[in-house]
Length: 205
Image 1 (spheres, rainbow, N blue to C red):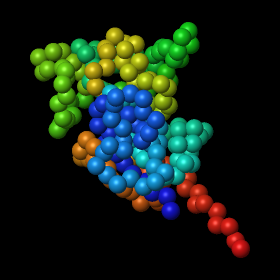
Image 2 (cartoon, rainbow, N blue to C red; image 1 turned 135 degrees about the horizontal axis):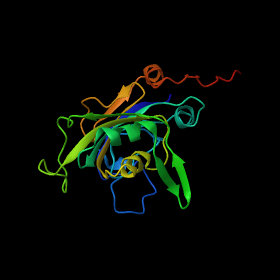
Image 3 (spheres, rainbow, N blue to C red; image 1 turned 135 degrees about the vertical axis):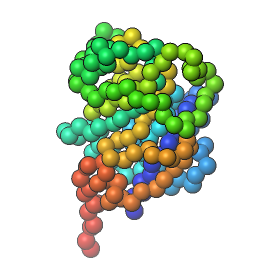
């Protein structure tokens, strides 16, 4: 039977269990007894934080991120300096970002709003102080190019200083603390992600 988990991925941790050639922590170093065959659904950069889905079901990534129907992802993003209404509207309308080399991509319209600083965040070394101008944004996108949100805010002239994924569709990070893991029921997991659950076929004798 497959199992499903929600994780609040800490800062400076890779979204993988093995194959690390860098001196950065991996998911297997968390204080949790994960089952055999567990893997992350999609990824967050090592320096990004927040909601990461884990499962032993190898089909979930294709169903969620590679299917025809787009699925929302919401991020809380701290950027340098004060964001004007004009810059915010640029984000909402779509901005041109570099994919790689000479390949560029114009992001589709997204939801973007200025929000208060999230409550209860663990301070990190090198964080912006209150005295330094900065803005917290909530950004919801429906696709996920490499480092897309970071590139989007950079494109409007506001470098990203902290990025936290807070939801994927109707699965929310909520009050789960950094490094915390919560197991979910299979039916509820699929329902909240708005993807169709197809149980594995049972072979007859």
